[in-house]
Length: 241
Image (cartoon, rainbow, N blue to C red; front, top):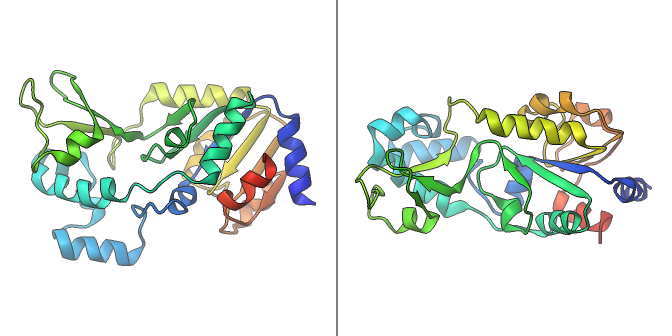
């Protein structure tokens, strides 16, 4: 019965916006979001915690160690888009989905075929020289021996992602709030309604329906109009086959 109600809500929608959370990334094989074991393993391997390494201060003062970690633990564990992302692309092509908004840095929605994606924290596929603004691909970063250096000016190339403690891009926040404010239906995937992603964006939603699909139950689930505790990659294709 829940599936039927969700399916009907999506069919009625003409302005659907998706908030895509961390657990969607986990379902793709992305291993960046580790637990206690991950943090312990990183500290044993690199001599620093993930929280210490993934900062602008560490990037600026220890670029060799930063890029050793970044290439192996982030670029090496990007995951692959799954049926969830492919279904979102179908919804976009049908004219229903107007935007995907995420804090994830792996660009999974775009890699799965979506065009209108707002990565609030940036994404790993955009890299730039901070001095001359020359852009570089993720392959350039991976293939560099040690620290990737700008071929034009010799500066250290910088991934265009928001490292811990940095301010988010205000233009992206404005764009996201506008998209959510225009939506008639909000599709929340792989995250609770009390997460940082939802906490910072739900206040802009004035539409009719919130649909939540998240495999991890949370006390706030009942605040959605419809919710299912299951993996988005299993449920979403059934809602828009």
